[in-house]
Image 1 (cartoon, rainbow, N blue to C red):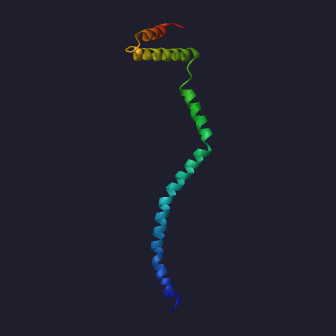
Image 2 (cartoon, helix red, strand yellow):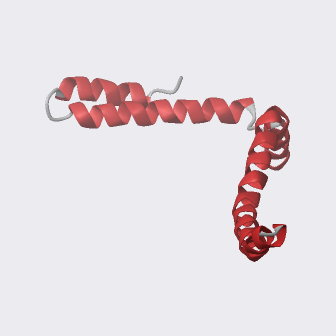
Image 3 (cartoon, helix red, strand yellow):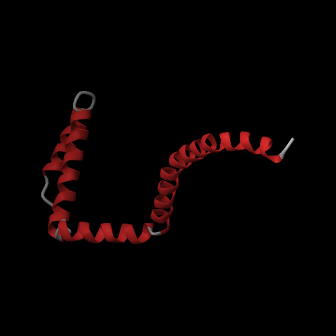
Length: 106
């Protein structure tokens, strides 16, 4: 027996092994790239959030104080009217009081 008899089966297996290794690497490569991207986003998350917040402030400016106060009052009036509708069947006097409070101008 010579060394060539052992080497020839290995030579026959090399192309198959190359195909298997190539297919494995082709499947793993996108996962590695995705993992790297997720890692970078985790590391730079505060920076990314700050940039997104700056873009939002630029395109959607903050409402004025008067607008925010009036919106808050409107939500309160809606809540009182909703409560009045809920109590209208069981406690009509209480519902009338709630409607009266909702109709007030503070």
